[in-house]
Image (cartoon, rainbow, N blue to C red; front, side, top):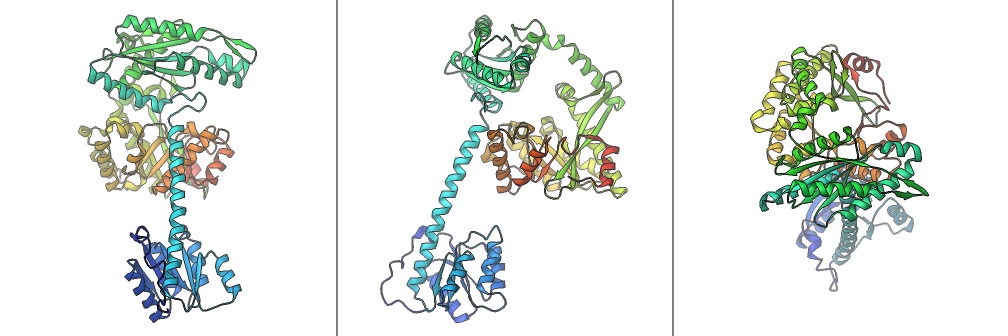
Amino acid sequence: MQPNTTQCQYQQIDRENKVMTTILVIEDVEALREEIMETLSYEGFEVLGAENGVLGVQTAKTYLPNLIICDIAMPELDGYGTLMALRQEPKTSMIPFIFLTAMTDKADMRQAMQLGADDYLTKPFTSSELLGAIASRLQKYNSVREHYYDEIKAVGARFEYLSHHDALTQLPNRVLFHESLTQAVLHAKINNKSLALLFLDMDNFNVINNTLGNDIGDQLFKAIAERLRRYTAPCDMVARIQGDEFAMIISDVSDPMSIKIESQKILDLLSRPYNLYGHEVFITSSIGITIFPDDHQEADGLIKNAELAMYYAKTHGRNSYKLYSSELNIQSAEYMALANSLHRALDRNEFRVFYQPLVDLQSGQIVGAEALVRWQHPDLGIIMPSKFIHIAEQTGLILRLSELILREVCEQMRSWRELGINYGFVAVNLSGQHFRPDNNLPEVIGKILQESNTEPQYLELEISERIIMQNAESTISVLSQLQTMGVKVAIDDFGTGYSSLSYLKHFPVNTLKIDRCFIQDVTKDSHDATISLAIIDLAHSLSLQVSAKGVETREQMQFLKDHGCDQMQGYFFSPSLPAAEFEKMLIDGKTL
C-alpha cells in the first residue's frame, strides 16, 4: 500500500461510521495485511485479520463485521469462493465487500461485481483510496439500513393498527376494547366515578346473511357501526367484539335509570330500517348492561357480567336490554347443572384427553401434538371445553382439572417412549390461575414430570397474552423458572390479546401461535395476511418458532409454508384424536 502524497478528503471518516465498526481484512500476504490493519486501527476501526479465505469465512460468520476487505488471489479458497460462501449465508449476505486485486483485466472486475462485490481496489493503492472506498461503502450501507429500519417501523405501525381495529367496520376490535375498558375502569376508580359497559348482539343476523348474502351482511355491519359511532360521545367508546357482537363503554353514569334510557335509545336507533342495494333491511338487537363499581371492579368481571346479561336478553324476547344482577348467575340452569356435575366429573374421571397433531411445514412430519380436553358426560355425551372451562375457572376447579390433564399427558408420553414411538412433544394449555404466586406452578410441574419419569423438553405449556399481561412481572418470573427446568413455553392465540410488542422480547417463551381467526381468511383477506406475515417475521426476528392454528385448507397450508411459518395444526391435516388413534397415526408415519 503506497503512502499518501496529497491530503485525502476521506482522511477523516464520519465518526458515526466508526462507532462499533468492525472491518475484516482477508489477505494472504502478511506484510500487506498487517499494514492495512494498522492503518484502519489508527483510524479508529476495530480490525480483524485472516490469512486465507477459509479462515475469513469462519471469522465473518463468528464476528459479523460491518465491512470485509478481501484479496482475490489466495491459496485454499480464493476471493471469489470466499464471496460466494458469504453471500449464501443469510447472516453475512449483506455485509459490504471490497476486493483487493493486482488484476487489471475488466473481465476479472466484471466477475467480481457479478458475484456481489460492492467495490474493488487495484494494487498498489494509497491509504486515501482505501479509506475512501470504505467511507463510500459504509455510507451506502448505513443509508440502506436506515431505509430498511424505516420500512420495519412502517410495517410495525400498520400491524399495530390492524391488530387493534376491525377490518370491516374500522371500529376498535376486542384487543383495543379490552385495553380501553381497563383504562376506563382505572380512571373511574381514581375519580370515584361510575361507568356502564354494554354488550350488543344483533338478533337473527344469520337469517339476513343467509337470505340476502354476505355482501349485504357486510354492508349492514358497516351501517350499524356507523350509527353506533355517531351516537357514541367523544369520551366514550364503541367496538366490534366479534361477528355480530358490539360493545360500548359509557362513562360517568349517574344512576341505573339513566343507562336504561340510553339503552332504549340505542335499541330504537338500531331498529330503524337500513337501505342497502335497493333492499330495506330491518334488524333488532339485544343489550346486556353492567355497571362499575356496583357489579364488579375489574374489566374481565364486567365483561362476563355484560355477556351474561346480553344472553339473558337474547333468550327472553330479544329487542330488549337487561341490567346485570347477581341473580342471573343463579338463573342460569345450564351453568348450575354443569357446575355441579363438574365436581363429580373430576371424582369420576370423566375427562378425556385428545391429541391434535402439530406438523412441521417444511418436512411435512408430525413433530408434536396439542392436548385438548373433552368431557365425557354420562348423560350429555361429549362436551367441548368452550362449555365448561369458564365454569371450572369460576368455581376454582380449573387447578384440579389442569393437574389431572398434565398427569395424564405425561403418563401417556411415558407409555409412548416405552413403546419406542417418537411423538415429539405435547403442548398443554394453562389457566391464568396457575400463575398466582401461591399456586407454585414450577413445583407442581416438576413433581408431575418426576413421577412420570418425563424429560421436561417433551412438555410445552401454552398461555395466552392476556394471562401474561395480567401480572407481567410475576408471570415472567414463573415462566423463567419453567424454562430453566427445560419446559418449553408458547404464547397461544397470539395477536388477539393485548401484550405490548416492547414486552415481548422479555418474555421467556419459545413459540408464538397465530390465532385461527387470522388463518381462516388468510388467503382471501389482505389484513389477515398482513397480520399473519407480521407475526411470522416478528417471531423469527426474536429467534422464536411460529405455529399456526386452525389450518383447514391446502391453500392456507401452502401460504403459511411459502412464507416461512414453522408448524401448523388443524383439520386440513387432522382433527384432535383419542390417544389410540393419534398413536396409530404416528406408527403409520402420516405426513403432509
